Amino acid sequence: MFKGITGRWILNTFSVILAIIVAIAISLVFLVTYLFQTSVEQSLASTESELSLVFPGYSCDSSTAFASAARDYVENFKKKEQMEVMVINSNGRTVMTSTGFIPSETAEKTDLEQAQTNGEGRAYWHGSLPSGESAMSLTRIITNDNGTVVGAVKYIVSMDPINNRILIISGIIIAIGLVIIGLVALSGFLFIQSIVKPIRRLSLTAAKIAQGDFSASEKIEHKYNDEIGNLCDAVSDMATDLQTTEQMKNDFISRVSHELRTPLTAIKGWAETMQLSERGKLDRKTFDRGMGVIIKESSRLTSIVEELLDFSRIQSGRMVLMNEKLDILAEFDETVYMLKERAVSEGKHLLYDEPEGVFPPVYGDRNRLKQVFLNVLDNALKYTPAGGVVAAQVIYTKDEPDIVKIVITDTGCGIAADDLPKVKDKFFKANQKVRGSGIGLAVADEIMNLHNGSLDIESGEGVGTTVTLTFPVYKEGEEKSMPENIKL
Image (cartoon, rainbow, N blue to C red):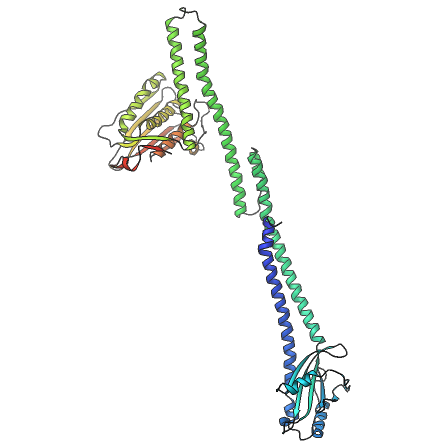
């Protein structure tokens, strides 16, 4: 019961609030009771103080004088509507009352005894009269000049009206406490439900998402733009991203399957042709052509597999760099030279003039950097139509002495503005019409990050693309602070 949010709220919060309200209500009831009783005692005490005027100095010479003065006092008593006054003689017998009724001699007189023995000459009494009526009394002892008790005066106030008032006020306090408890419970219940219901829906939605039903996120609704609302939006966005990633992954698998099938089909076809042809009957030209296709497609197949392996290494953190100090200009020049023949065969212009001057070295993995160069140049050639231009340049200036830049610009189809932020994401492929797995640029970007460099892309649809590779310049002692083999 107390494992859920509602149960914990009842146990940790509502129970504390309930205890506080109950404690406050009980304290108020006791306080009201005390104040009313105190007011009655004060009223009795103020009335009792009048005796100093009736019996000056409380010095009556005889019981006869006391009785005469007491009779006059009772007859002229002004608070007969509020309380009863009794006159008690020196023998403890009630001889006169303001109501005219003399109480039974068997009535309890503990207050008179206390007044005689407590040294104060007065005593309060709380209890019930023989009639069952609740009452409070104050008894005052009257003495003569010699200290001899000549009698006593007793004031009695009925407590039933006071108790009724106390009961009414206590009832009001308890009712207010119950209303507060009810409001707190209702408010807490509504608040808890505003949290529990969305969380339950989120839990069900998350379970559906975990089972592959990404459309369930479309049903997430929330009323408030608070933390719960943000959580609902986050789950919805997460599901959308997962759905997009899942679709990209499926497209990636489809593309890779196609990329693998194409060279395998060519290799298998030419291998079967060469096998089925009669020994010695296959002319040299056809043989050379078939072997050329097999070698080319095998290289292409190897490249795809290596790309997939690199992607797997990056995803699992097993990418290994063999770092050394190297001439970035020489490495890039070699890569451009490798692609010159391809550009000519495709009717495209690959422009690159090796810059003059001495370039500072960089620290990195020779083969991985060539992989980045090949990927970027390959993309530029793939997306540039026949007759188009791919231009490359290496830049190092005194204005930026700590970095070397390689800028590759093409006049290809360009990248749409919506697709540009995602081109370096895994599985993403903006143009589905051009061959490629869609992970090469993601791998290249990760390699640049491992070299503390960056890969930046600027593009406009229909105007071409510019890729800028930025490398930090090698500093003396860098190889000491970074091991030769870096496993990430």
